[in-house]
Length: 375
Image (cartoon, rainbow, N blue to C red; front, top):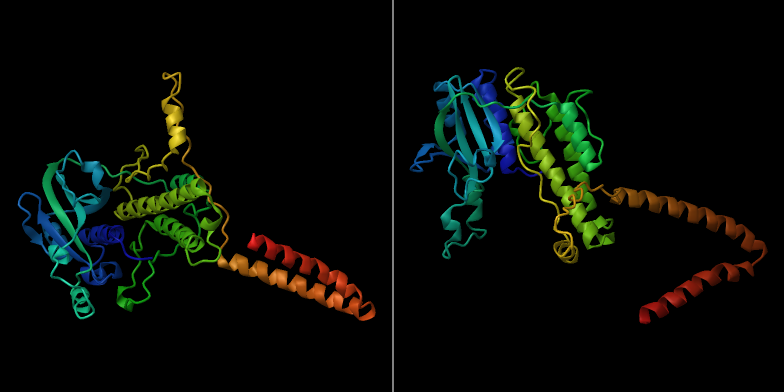
């Protein structure tokens, strides 16, 4: 699993909340693997001035100003209150104070020199660029401090697991069972950078649920990989392929939802408001577009006053046909064929003419298959 902007936001908010609450030290986690090959820049929204050029400095400033926790949200939640440009479309980190809160909208910036026609990112240059952390730039734009309290809803993890399982038709852990931290795949990182995405805290249910969804993501990636001989897309028509693609998008969307809620849950019991109606931090992906013929038919319906209910977007994931399933089936087939050959060999020893009858169906099959190919 590669590191995306969402992973850096989850680690920053969850571990950063612990730092603001004196539950950890920056030296314990600032080397986290999700922050490798990425830079963080914190700017003022008004004039784009740089307020801090590293998240450790930013957290220290927040702590000195009296911030008590962080929370992670979808940026669209604050679209009406915070002016944003095209760069600030992804997420928002909220710094909570005793007397108010401050919204920091987040986005990934791209340096202009990469688009300069004179620049050639060849093998003589790129090792130095990436060694200096030029792979990604996460920029945070500061909003005005707003008086009052921003409620962060608590998560009913059992109910969330049931809802995700019903939507994706998969079985997921509901929060019971042994606790284990959730790690991203960091094979090349040093030992000190291999930390759980979420800190070991009260958010154990988020660890379990994220691990379950990660397994589904890995299985889906294997079953749909173009180089996999059992790629399920090979056996699907256009409509079924679109439905399966949409299932994968919903899976990724639910994973982000779990990670955001896990980051917010790290503030501890009582920090989040309970009893709030369930609302997604990020909207689910839009349903696949209807076929043009079906849409035209609906537009030209005689009774324009009758509005049909939208079809369900729930798509059942087809059974996995991964490489291991194919290999087991092949092994069983070989074993059965071997037993058949051994049994027939004893009979042919006494009745050699039976070999003609046994070989005749195979010869006919090959003959007519060759004619079909020529046709």
